[in-house]
Image (cartoon, rainbow, N blue to C red; front, top):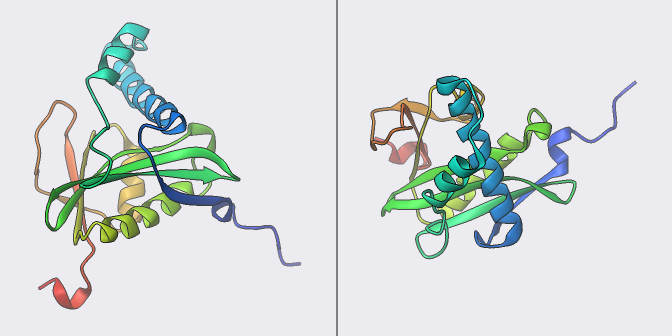
Amino acid sequence: MTNTAPRRSDLWAVATADVTAPEALDLLREYYYDVANRYYRLHFDREGTPEELESGLADSPSDDLAAPDGLFLIGRHDGAAHSCAGLRRLDAATVELTRVFVRPGLRGTGGGAVLLAAVDRAARSLGAERIVLDTRLDLVEARALYLRNGYREIPAYSSGPYAQIWYGKNLAPVEQRR
């Protein structure tokens, strides 16, 4: 008997969104709390305090993930906003991927791959030929997602307290990669 149920990833759809919209701000807060608390647990054996988390969130604005040099994507699972990603232009040919997040309860449902496919299309719409990103070594699920979706480790292009490994993906057609 053939399983006719839709693939889990078929329940995902991704579209550009206003980074200042309430649902975008909710996802960005959840993203920040998730990665910050993982850092606090790893390095301090505790959760971040509400004051630490809100202060860090305020120090990490996302307003550059908007036109003309950036954009923000929201992924919807069965119609509800559950994932996000942002792009910001670094130069004429390169965009930086940031704020990649899938709510923990929906990880493993194909939403990350659907989100990254939409990121590729969005980067091309900005005229980019290459996507780069930096991340932390402890974010192993994110790192595995990037590798499964065509990203490869590259030399450091940025510095910062949380930039520990860098990835890139060339969007140019094969014949233009020489």
